[in-house]
Image (cartoon, rainbow, N blue to C red; front, side, top):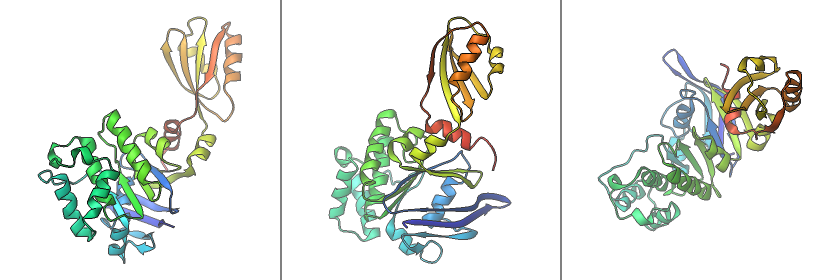
Length: 301
């Protein structure tokens, strides 16, 4: 296993940030780590990268114990923290050369990671002159300098515009072809595009750990788009069993959200018939990770 976490707990005073968290990640997996703000994502990542100590439990990264062999962990992990710390007055190559000395890697590696992360057009500039997207590339290049087996990325696409987001996504996908990647993000499309497994944490506890395709299959929140032939008073939808939310998109078009394992389209058809309505269209929307996330983090655990 690349990462093994056994009953890790962390306290900040009386607050329990992590509550007996356990999971393992195999070599070569790309795993999305999701949770609301304050759920414990960054805390766990800091423990796995030896920046914080756990109060209870243990963790291994590439076989190195984070508590007793921190140097081994640091040598085998590339870490991009949420707030990417950079020396803005240094040039890109100058900054990477500094980090190459820290990791004791050949200077030739600098040009390799510049090319790998798409930094070549901006590599002659000072970091302070770069856009947020290119600064993130510098952070990724730094994390990759020593060719680590594991990448731990905390919110790698925060604050990026849509074009930058796609670019960084492609970089992560490419470097993840031969590495283990553990990344946290609030952008569900990122996970759907990059990851093959999802771990969701809520109030310091793991509430879901599934392959992405299996997770989508089991979700019980379903969204149905319905167009009626006339205006429907919203209070009428109270007749629909399992309905949790209704939204009038436009004119007589409604988005109805159900919490049920059954197909709600038959219910909608019967509802329309009973109320003298005609359903001009009933379309079940594809289940997505955002729906799953809302369902899994709706209740305190």
